[in-house]
Amino acid sequence: MSRIKGALIGCGFFARNQLHAWKGIEGVEIVAICDRDETRLAEAGDAFGISRRYTDAGRMFDEGGFDFVDIATTVPSHRPLVEMAARAGGGDGLHVICQKPFAENMDDAREMIAAVEATGKTFMVHENFRWQSAVRAAIEELRNNAIGTPFFGRVSFRSGYDVFAGQPYLAEGKRFIIEDLGIHILDISRALIGDVARISATTKRINPEIRGEDVATILLAHENGVTSVVDCSYATRRSPETFPETLLEIDGTDGTLRLDAGYRLTIQSGGGEDIRDVAPPVLPWAEPPWHNIQESVALIQQHFVDSLSEGRAPETSGDDNLKTFALVEAAYLSAAEGRTVALAEL
Ligand SMILES: NC(=O)c1ccc[n+]([C@@H]2O[C@H](COP(=O)([O-])OP(=O)(O)OC[C@H]3O[C@@H](n4cnc5c(N)ncnc54)[C@H](O)[C@@H]3O)[C@@H](O)[C@H]2O)c1
Image (cartoon, rainbow, N blue to C red; front, top):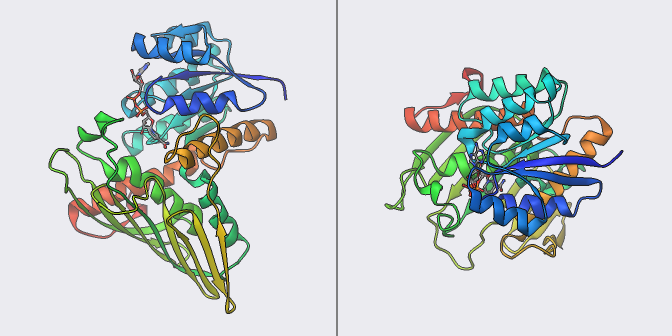
């Protein structure tokens, strides 16, 4: 496939990882960037040697010259930007990657998917957590039937890390942990175990300085009869601090799989035990403890490029990620109304 050209919108906190990762992917060049904040735009442009810079996304789309757009802004701008991308090139549209959460509500999410689908282009949600190599190793083990048929899962993220320092907007929203972090953990549960039929959730706010919930415990009844628990907390002070690791525990008919702190994967089955170090590499531009997330960014972006060249939908296409997004909406509904919510209701 010939070299593909991309543009990135939103040069904020997380976009740096995306820009670094694009630099490392063969056959891709980011030719233009956009941010309405001129200082951030200049910093990113200088750091990554990108000369086409825009404060107005509309102008960037009008001038064109790229095949895909990588949208790394926060959620309120996602729908207008995705729709602009679909109208670009006189309606030919562009391939689109959009950060999570990709929409503010289910209706917007469906409209965004439909807008890109009408152009025949690819729409991927940047849902990177399932691309962490340690999580990938667990997914592979389950696919290879290492513990037989799963009947229980726990996907857990508990930390006291100060995420508000880098992302102050997280303290301000009515919703916090399920929408921002739980969305990834719910997606990992889907990737490991499958789609979900019913959900029950409780939420709590421990940190008085923030507006939304910082603790959520979610029970998932999967369509295949498996039960899983997704538990998330940013109020858990523990040592060692495991941020930003997702820990796993899966019970199957023939054994158990655990991903413990420190990226230790244990498979017990048939009376034997296999313990593996599945620690991710620290990429040259990465910085612990973020390196596992940073590696997952490089892996999902490579997956996007591979999907384009192979002409298949990415694993976290808009249609796929709508199911993860629905879990977020269902979890908030369940917590608000104190009842189990069937996904079919959404
Ligand atoms: N996948 C992950 O692991 C991960 C981690 C952190 C953040 N995120 C997601 O990435 C997104 C961005 O988060 P962040 O922390 O980098 O936010 P941020 O506020 O630091 O950066 C967003 C940038 O987008 C710019 N922007 C907003 N609307 C714009 C518009 N219409 N046109 C041009 N520029 C615009 C802002 O000026 C800002 O510089 C969010 O959706 C967040 O949930 C994902």
